[in-house]
Image: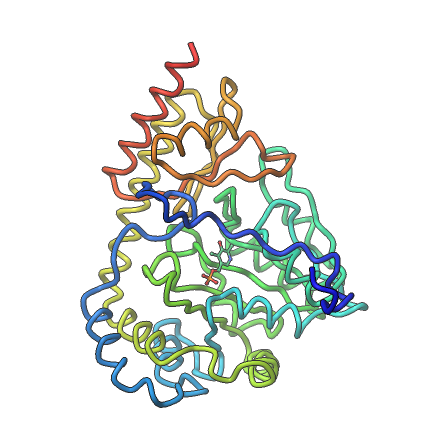
Length: 354
Ligand SMILES: *Cc1c(COP(=O)(O)O)cnc(C)c1O
């Protein structure tokens, strides 16, 4: 830390992204990216759009917001886009929480939530998951706080039903409820249809996982016109050109080839169910994930040891050094070929223990 660094950040512990190693080619199952490339029209569109890079992007991102509104059955005014959904989440934390309105989220969830809270100096409470790693909806009834729930949750992959989400939204009428649906396209129920009924609901989604665009950075939020306006106040106060030209075009084209992406999501869901079965037959306990990853532990091998053994064999998974979950690994679902390789290697690792 330099002597110039503001003291308000002296205790800030930044978020640690998953490894993106360059030393050799890994089977990369650690950051929940898609194993499939973007659709061909996305590729072509980005190339074409590059010709216009001397111009600023549209600060309203009208074209893609209109396309998103059409897809999700809302109006353009209900949609905001951002540099990844991380940015939208950060805006939402800034906009809808303060000393009098703390945040509340599960103790085991997306690691960025406590970081966004701390960087913005916002108080927060963490509610423990139950013994099965599930979110108890009752913990989030009438909280008097800004509620943040990832659905499906990460890194467990477990999802709440839309009716559970509705109960939470309904009971927190005087507060904002943020539902982070980064993984919703892999099999959970979306809360987007509830937007019309409840003014206190904000749903965020991303192109990073289900639409093969993690590197382009595009996320969006859907909510009532009023709360989207609040988010825009913060966006225009920090970075009005938050979505660059190529990304906006890529996202627009991706929506035009949604069939391709939704089919990929189906393949990944099938590969996930295959992987869960295989891991369970090897003695792992695995959550009933509805996301593009599984969360697994084994009595015979420590989570960190398995992570290291796999890494040595050229397979990267995500291990979290966090007390309650340190025996687990989060494994991104890739192609069937990758999953078979993973299972093969795990079998060998377990054999070597004997
Ligand atoms: C990946 C992820 C996000 C955001 O990803 P972006 O790439 O910024 O859109 C948000 N929430 C959860 C739970 C995630 O796993």
